[in-house]
Length: 249
Image 1: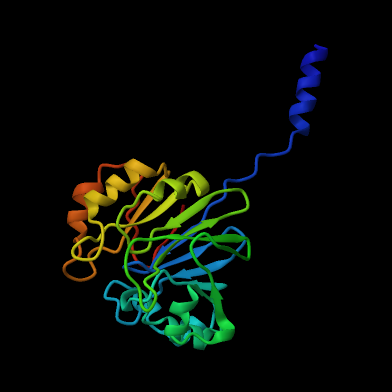
Image 2 (image 1 turned 180 degrees about the vertical axis):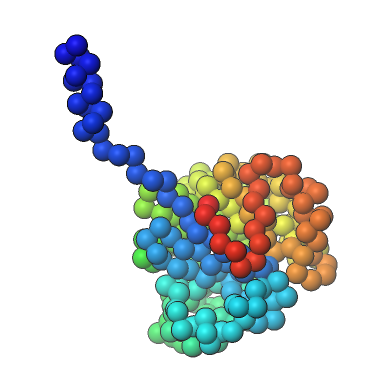
């Protein structure tokens, strides 16, 4: 009886289990995302919007969008289908832009708003630590594209692969940062890894609980959505997001 009362007292006095940390993720079409942390830190990744045929219409008005500035804009590389709107968004919103110094200068991002990083570097934005990791692609003017891993204080992490082919150092991204969520480039064509190669990259290097396909179906010769679903659709971890609709991940 005494033991039971002691156990009950211990249970009643135990701290409640904290709710699981989640990112709120909105796909903006192609490789663009809005990511919001539990603490309200709002980040835009590769926000190509005005000429993006898959971007929601409500997101194409850059002046309206800039009236609620993000905590930062993260840029993986300089190609137009990722970076075309970054200079305008930066100028209108005053938000800092994260990327390599060479790329940000080439895009004429205002110097005071350049938050420069390089492979292996990290920076804290609100309650999110942003890690810059390699990607295997091309980029003007320095040839250094990036991926990003966003880490919350409790450890939950989200990896935006950027445009890339699979590469051996993905194993180190897993070992060091163990992403729970992977925003996965699957478009293929002439520009990067196709759905089958992307599936191999996850199978070989990562152990995520959630996989979000991206960079497909926007224009030829990228893989179409049916082609991507044919390869990835049987994996229960895959979440097919609808542009403009937020998901808790």
